[in-house]
Length: 233
Image (tube, rainbow, N blue to C red; front, side, top):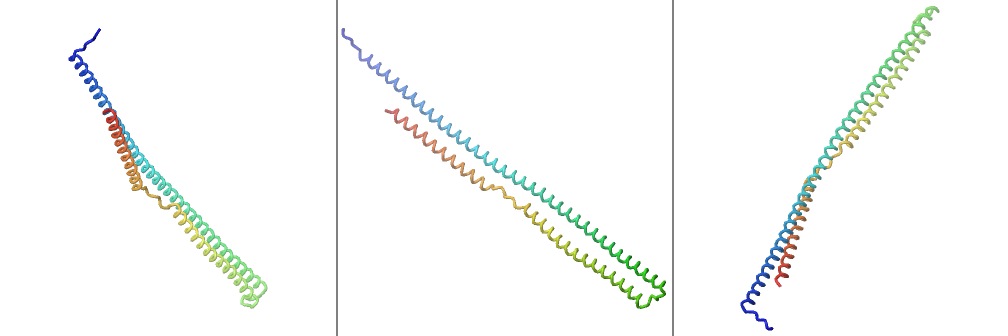
């Protein structure tokens, strides 16, 4: 049995096949375009998120540095105030000690004078009872000895007072110098917040994100062109 296909029917079949092929190619091209657009949008979103993260990280770094500097300033202020209080209390205690020493020295001088006066009165009374005149050589010699002893004792106290005063002055100078040195150590310069460095670092990271984004777009476009080339065969 011989089958015969009419030319019109064959042409119709070929046309339908061509239409189906064209539709498939169009669908594939549309899918490829959609995939490329999705990839590009994803790359853009990722770059945006990375940029926001970089800005936020830089802000947190600067804020942390500011807080640390503020805390250091507050700590220095408290330590400086405590050192000032300590120094003033020490000086007050030293002044009180010096006043007590001055009072004690004055009391000693007074006691020396009282003892000398008593000794002189006793010598005069003894001389009178013995029938000796106060102007006699023996009585005058004894009175002069009492006066000499009084002068020696008072001079010794005066010397001690002067030596002690010099020592207190030098010790006061040492205390003041030591306190000033502690203040210098407490109030050392605080490292300022490196705003410029943080911004430069953020700019560098931003440029890196931008370069990566451009690279991603280039690769996406390259892959898209390669798909189109393969699909054209």
